[in-house]
Amino acid sequence: MINTIAIIALWRRKPDRLNKKAAKLLWRSDPITPKHEPPDFPTSFDNDYDRRFFADFKDFADVVNWWLADEYVGSRWRLQDLPDTDRRMVDHRAGPVFGRRFAIFYNQTRLGELEIGPAHRYSTEAPQVYTSMEIDWVRMLSFSIIRDFLAAIAMHVTDPRPNSTEAIAARQHILGALIEVLWNNYRLSENKDLDGQDWGEVALNFQGSAEWYIDRKNAWWQNRGAIGG
Image (cartoon, rainbow, N blue to C red; front, side):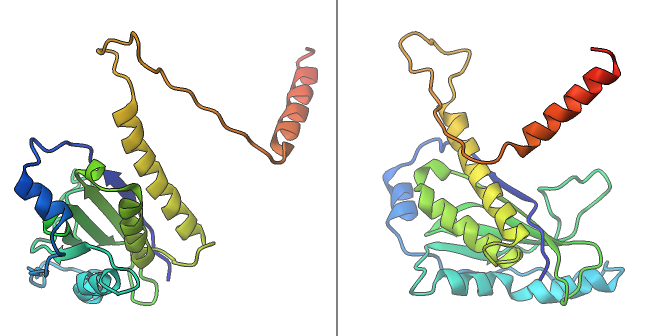
């Protein structure tokens, strides 16, 4: 299976107010029982690739929810079918972009959306897809809860073998999105009073081969000799 994960974006908007009822629904309730609103089969399909994708992903929410609800996974995330097929997280300048859309719930709270669309010449034998997610209120949940859900989605839409190029790329997308959320909330704004605040410090170590530097150095010396430096 060759698939592509395109975007994982984590929204950083804060709720206007998380009252007791909202907090209970988010943190201390049971996962929803999805009430799917699957889209009708679009009559505008003009090729077999879209038809095949639509049929193959008819059960996507149920299959993923089956994984999430497994006793050994024990996740409180759930997906719920949305009725429209117009993807909203992609460029629409060339017109509507077809795909399947799903609401993302954590317990009883809807936190975002997931969209999946077929790549060119999609087939069941080579099910290449593009996946986009937007999740809100991520600071209300732990790092591992967010990461594990994103990893579960990635496992269903990319090559799940741990050392595959797609799996590695998906993990990098996930970690990059989570780090961006942390950084944007930790970053000091130029409009804030900077006196008395920790301005931040980064410490890290590398160990590895400097072959690329050596190659670049040799090329630099050759170029320098060529111009009489």
